[in-house]
Length: 456
Image 1: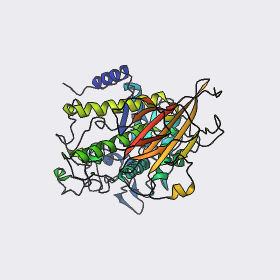
Image 2: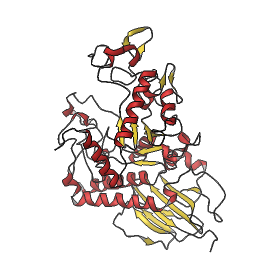
Image 3: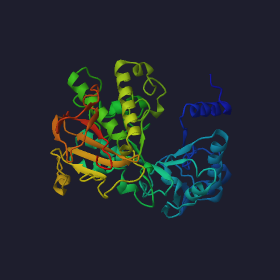
Image 4: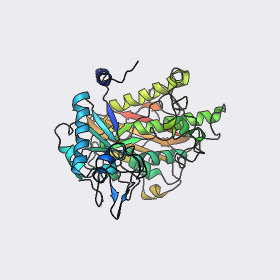
């Protein structure tokens, strides 16, 4: 039984480290529980309201509310900055925390004239001898003016990539005109992060998080079901980019269940085969559901609890094993987790560029293909040196339609091996002998090859 002692935190971190798991602490330095000017005086308001909080310049009786919680902590004030720095160092030095995820990170970077990536707090964290060696992850938005700053944080920070979430959800939901956007997300969102010597890891890719739907609910509900929260279903996001595939909520319809399964596996493969840092929501690997509730923070009951019996069910075990296969493939292939942004470059072998895009006919994508709003078929070939003599080559086949389609493999002909087919996850690995391969709707397929660099 937990007693709330600090040593319990130390013991938990030590146990996780012993298992090879780093600990990232989610911290909230952007607001406090004192709320707006109408809220209670509990701590900082009674000490020095004008120093600890941002106030309206022309009416300092009122708080600036860039956080949506009533107040905004003034991290540009030297004493407030010192308080945050002392807190962060305490967690690292006393508990050996490996990094931090900053809630509403844009708020922490606000100076008098708005968000500043070179603000005092960010500079202090990056140069501090204790903190510059830990992971720093920002939620790159708040509700204030200019509050969406994805890609605009300084080098050394990673950022939750909300565009990855939205573009991937919309593509697999069936929205038109998303083929180009999906291509950008697969390549580490270089359009957002490839500047100031930043690396793909700066993009924290996710499809679901603790706020919003679980992955199971994302393919099972088109409307939020938050009645249990006591706010007449007004709370939580209304636009979830979800699809129920034919029925709202639980169903026994075999066709609908099959489509939901394929959609889940396709999104998981997209997440794990995209460059950047993948973030997987707890429970998504075995089908956890919140019954369509997309704002379950206030629920300490079966709505938000983990059903570990589900994890031990046949379906739960199958999905967990599938996710494990994706992770192993990502570990095995440098092309699936590149350390630097991959663009053009000289051919590694004749006709084998580092990055190539193809349509389903095996022809290089043209501008007219990218402009085709109805185009939902795509192949991505990546190639990187692996060791002294071989090249790691992977070919990703993507079928975003609801129907099966044949893909013609592009030139040059390589000794392809089927590694995983999300439309048929039970299929074993095999060598691919033919030049045409069929892929089910709402599915992803990964092929790999390892030709020698000397061409032999």
